[in-house]
Length: 208
Picture (cartoon, rainbow, N blue to C red):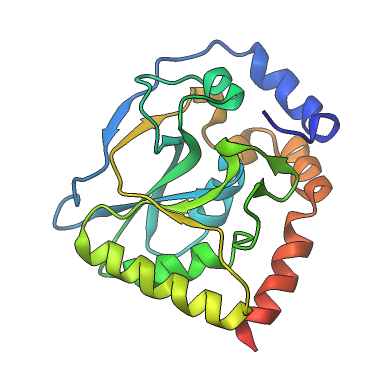
């Protein structure tokens, strides 16, 4: 569960009051249609992953969910408690004619702390680590090459995991587009976690 309980309490109060919905099953290995494709990333809090990717030209839809585990139909409470193997993640539906998978990787690295092996920002625990979920051999090669470049730039071991994409489970509806539905609470959470301050510091290092 989030360690930033004080920061998140206001945000989760409204969320917990909403009825839980059965997560939808999204089979990750599919490369999508000729027009659209999907990429899968774990960036800590999936609210932030949605907010970061939905503003990118060429990205058509971002869904919050759970990936990397073995439990079927995992719930937010189960994933937060640990033991399911799942990580809070996002499914990014994008137009490869506008933005490439490699460019999505670049955006991913600029929105995570790749040096944190305990989670992301103020959220700690196995369900908050950063990860890339390649769906095929080409995506794995691209992910591994990008990780090597980031590690060389930062000069420190990168903790981000590369995990083969399997099943992506859609999170409960109250998590979808949380930053749009609850902008004040979301802003309070993100600012209180120090996410953007840390990202600014890391981006300077990556661009030097």
